Image 1 (cartoon, rainbow, N blue to C red):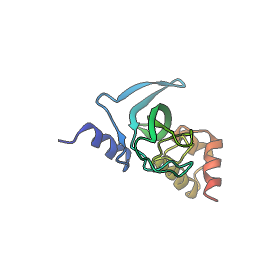
Image 2: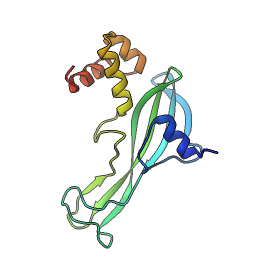
Image 3: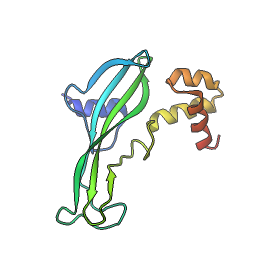
Length: 154
């Protein structure tokens, strides 16, 4: 039998082993007046080096320092908006005093749209579907569709 963690990873196409789903991580709620899907997960790991100063994590020189929740827009599920509420681990480097957050290949740093959603939008842009139809289909703004297509140089 497939466990909840693996089930959600397969459904959402997540390959990162540092993302964990708890039991009862799914809920349906309203967002901007629409019934929406919300799935909660945690991103955590033990960093090997500080990305800011480059020092190795030796004898707890980098410590875990709480979590920061981020709302990541996913591909729609059953024609309803879907979001991943990802609690990202915060770290504090005791050597340089800087803090940083856990990163994942599932989303780019400082971005709140999954790579799968970006790829779907780009596919529709390449197929000459109107920007307003793309925005309506994926529950994003027309500006977001334009920005994603410009980032890809289309």
